[in-house]
Image (cartoon, rainbow, N blue to C red):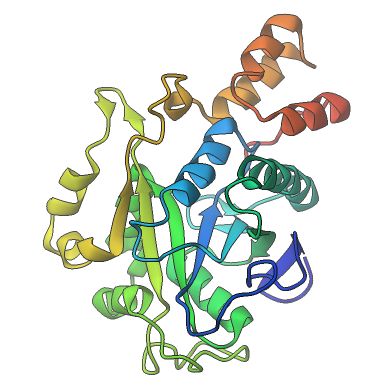
Length: 288
């Protein structure tokens, strides 16, 4: 990553985030963002993106203009991540799978891989709007229920007016209000156009109830119309909801390479290109 705080590493078209071939500027602009550690990317990551794209009509926007796979070097709980280059390689392979899986239905979709040096969603949104420059985009972050809970945890807003920060994230931007030079004026000049697209996920008692999470306190209820639910994304019965990067790392580590039994399980967890990359590199992803 260069000295900046936000960088697009690669994209399927140089016009990102405009869709390939562009579309009228008076149309709503929306970017679907999967912000993850990608350590490694799994079939669940792939399904989350493709299902969100498939259901785009009901999500306040007629379509998503672009997809961004975003890796945050800084983590609010874990500090600074290592092995950025390898993580970006894996994200590029995931973007190939996304394009391949959506070519027939979304031939103009533009997918990018990006890196940001920020931990909180509001800071990531601010840096991305600065990068885009004109403040005309809504930013749809795919999150899990556990991340939704952390998003509203007061400890991440200590020393600030939490309500004002959340307002700045969820309020729509004023076109032309966000500059690339800084974000100090973003709250006064319009919001950051943030949205949360929350995917249900397994807990010990089954899928977490997203609607119950949104009802459990006044702050979440205040923004509930800007928090959308991606339910049933694992309705094909293949158990992707319960799969995780942690399990993939455990299988890779236990195999000390990739043995037959571990590979059979990994084929159910990882996209083909990801598994091939890890086989060739014979490298177990670190925990950071």
